[in-house]
Length: 134
Image (cartoon, rainbow, N blue to C red; front, side, top):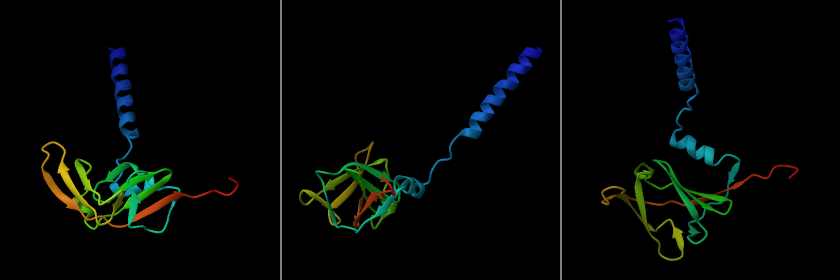
């Protein structure tokens, strides 16, 4: 009986410790801050190359982040509340670049119906800050 009580107490202690160690979920703004840690903003541009750009990430309700080499381009649309990582972005570029005037529709991932559209803004490049001695 005593062994059972010790086993139950140990199980409760381990389960309680796991709950305490769980990381809090980051807000979308905090996720963007974490992505941009150690980077500095450059001069905004109205277009970026669609050939060099890969790894696009949607930060729900905040921004689109595009990776091009070591540079991250952040686009904060005029209607960021319509950004949802559960949607698919359908982009109709006007050429070989993605520009702030391009049409971007959002489509439901499951039902494939249009849920809205995004009005892109300027693309702000973020580059890593060089540290002294490197």
